[in-house]
Length: 153
Ligand SMILES: [Zn+2]
Image (cartoon, rainbow, N blue to C red; front, side, top):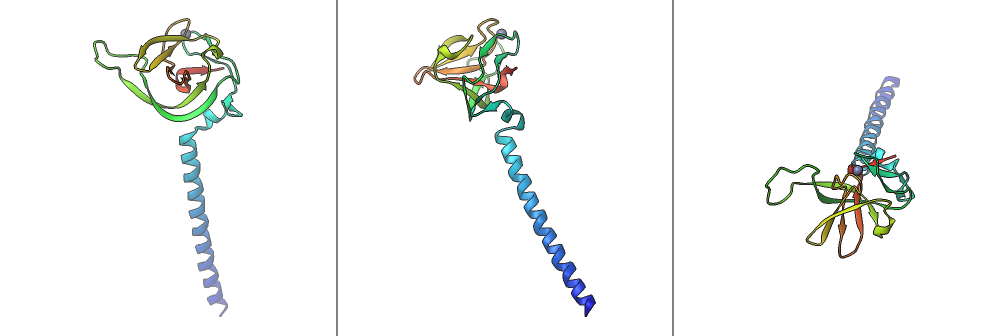
């Protein structure tokens, strides 16, 4: 009789363990998709939805934005890649998902604008003119700086 109870206990315990494993797995999957949306590294750059640190050019350290001057946005948008093959009809782009949104272009410490393409101007470093580091919407007048194309210091 005791043995029977013991077996039942073991069975239940194993079932509990499986439930626990299942929950743990779900938890891990949840954490994983969270990290994919907003990486742990990115979270450390955001304070109250805005940039915690100075944003600068990756090539020449020119200051682009001061702390707490832009709002974080997680949204996929294409941006031309920094280097382009010559004699191409349209530029190669990559989809980037993390942006600093600047409502007023006078908020920038330093920024350069490229020629207009459609309703868009591309943002380049004011000092070394490398980029694009983001894009500017001529209609809304908002600017979007790609987290992946700048340095956070
Ligand atoms: Zn630069």
